[in-house]
Image 1 (cartoon, helix red, strand yellow):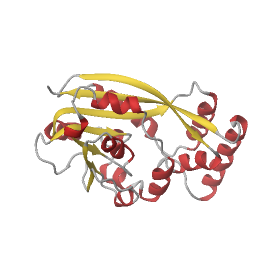
Image 2: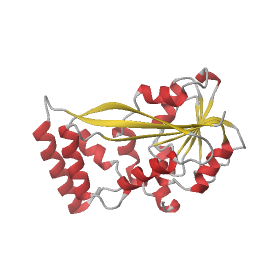
Image 3: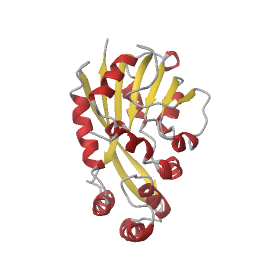
Image 4: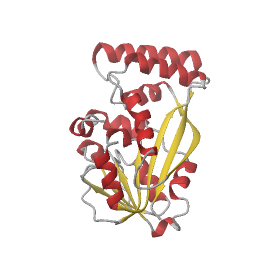
Length: 246
């Protein structure tokens, strides 16, 4: 479903924008990923495709010990330190972790880059209790979010958004354990620079040259049409899919 080498390197120039402008996950989504596993302070979580550590810090904020697995050195370098987060250079197919060593293995906004049978077999090998996918998508019932989505689709350079949809379907058919699905709404409030930064964090959009200038122009126009007091809300729905082995 994806080219592993390409996907591990494509965010190198986007790390700063990703760290600054990507949203956190709603508290309810983190709750759903941890529900029923007991005191988070007793858990070891692996965050696979951890990026700049947004989700890793949220799990660590609950008290869990987190192994953040991320193959891109630039993304790891852009991460904020957290005393409960240990970083590891690895991929979803080759994490380098012992069998049944992780209570919760989570892939957050990254599963579409490695939604392969080999990765899911590795998840089942490493996780002893639960595997979870957390993935947010635009909720285009909101007017600004629909305008933002229209611009994104006009400038998209590949089929990343289709990959994300296919990845959720692939995980729903996870052959190692039954899957439960939930969804949680949230909003990210952005000023004009935040809207442009959010787009700059997306690896399938241009970030330089004439196309980037045109993308900025169209996003700024969408922002101006919808802004109130210098800000807009980008509406998202976070999907949480969990598979339990117990």
